[in-house]
Amino acid sequence: MHNDTDSRMTLTAGGLSGSSAFMRALACAALVAIVPIALPACKSTVCHLPAEPINAESLAGDWYIASVYGEEVAPLLQDGGRTPAITINADGTIAGFAGVNRVNGSVDAEMLARGEWVASSMATTRMAGEPGMMALEQKILSALQSADTVMHTGGSVVLAESGEPVLTLTPANR
Image (cartoon, rainbow, N blue to C red; front, side):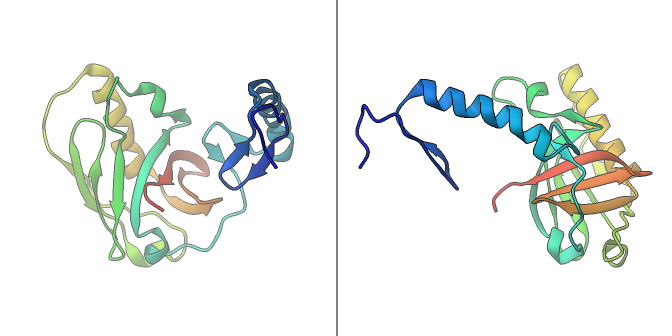
């Protein structure tokens, strides 16, 4: 039984439970120390984990853009800024928000089955925005165009160019 003075914690799928702030901080510090050892191929939001099979249907859905060229997107957003995101449809069409403007395009659905990312030219609306967000948007558009491979890794999707991650997508509503 758990009470307010209980300092025990339980690790569940939803996270840590327990009442002691000190114990939570201690557990977080332990995880920070252990995770780099357990997952040495991970850096920030980009992980080089074994790839899972991929095709257009497995990519179909809404994805947040978590990192671009190894840089996390969240710290770059302005207060209240909308997270860049794309929707990939089973037919390979892509629609989304790149930071300032809407983006549309497509990727060859047959090539996805081979893990290859072959994108059409991306069309965008032409609104101006804050210079930092415009720069982020240009990086996202460049990554969508330059990527040549795609893989599922631990629930995320990584687009890569010549083996180097250029864009990491995380599920938006899964």
